[in-house]
Image 1 (spheres, rainbow, N blue to C red):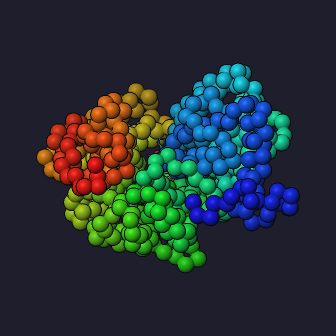
Image 2 (image 1 turned 30 degrees about the horizontal axis):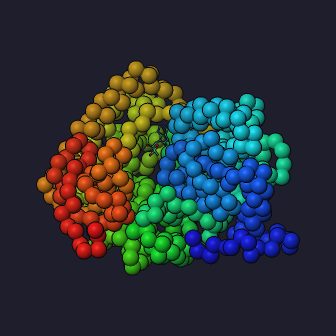
Image 3 (image 1 turned 60 degrees about the horizontal axis):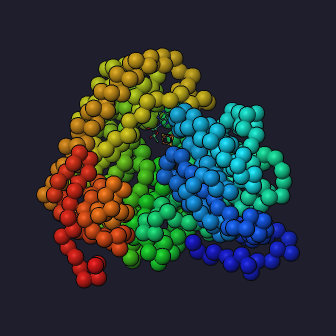
Length: 488
Ligand code: 5AD
Ligand code: SF4
């Protein structure tokens, strides 16, 4: 990141700086002293592990947490037997919460064997008061709990875990702060997520996100561009712009700017090869954005456009602010303007009051839009959301029937859609060695489809041209057909 400070040069004798970024570097320097002492005590470098639950926003937050832990001297590992373990939690559906409680039980037993182990919890689930009550009562072995709004002060909280005994809880209700220039440790060298905005103002009636992530706040375009330029210099070729609703980016800035305008500026960054973004709300997707995507050489041919339901009646109860017809017209326009685009979606089955007729409406939309992929979720009641108080919660058997029906159609259409490129060639960004067969590499096409093909690991992070020989359900098997001299 820009302006990363050298912790050894910071003065720990003076007072704590007032400016937030400087303040956090001060605490990192202090934490480094504690970690040095711990290293001496253990006779080895202490390890840290950050486990992410949930979405890409959380994954990016975790990279920031790892960045700080690494910066203060921890060795990063994926093993939860580490000396400092953080669970970065999600609460969008109840099963995410249940998984966290289950995994916490395992951490408790690890801690018995490693008394210097510290356990921290953060993320969306921590913004729910009932969760905090439960942790306070039954999970006393947790050392630190913080939320989504104060994640930027992790260094300061980390120091406190060395300075004070017992459970530290620091949860904020909201914030308008965006703290720039803290360290980040990326999972991939060649691709990176970039937050362009935080929070959500939409209040879809089933969704807890606006309550746990707060109101919409956009980052200044100059900070975003500076971060991307720096990443490109470090070797990043693909970026994913992140926000709960990227189409309303920039509306509340002092000098308002549209998401499409931001994309135009990002496109100009030399050396950047691919731009992705997530998530788009259909109600805010502008013609200007379609135009920018159409003209762009870098914006990937993929749009994630959550439908949630194909029934106008249910969409209204969900407070989505579009009808079935408006969604279909939008999808048609996008397909007409950008024919090679892949459209993916999110669907909820079992929203209160949903009938099998409503499910049929959803299936109708799936058949007409022909999604390349769709994430189908069973409705989960989230306390505090308007939908939780609605009557007519759908019986489990009906939910299951609807879910299975939707899933079948989604899979059939996706298989058909993905197969439409068989026999063609495509540019593929090589991401990793194939998990099942290490003679193969795995990469992604611009439209996000996975391709597996033989090749050496040195190609990871490069864009290669691949023949799409065989479609196997949702991915391709292929061969590299273009080898420029400096590729091998
Ligand atoms: N129940 C089920 N799915 C939900 N989502 C959000 N809230 C809920 C809920 N209460 C889904 C939506 C959203 C995705 C990120 O999670 O489909 O687009
Ligand atoms: Fe939740 Fe709706 Fe905001 Fe998405 S747009 S985060 S579904 S409230």
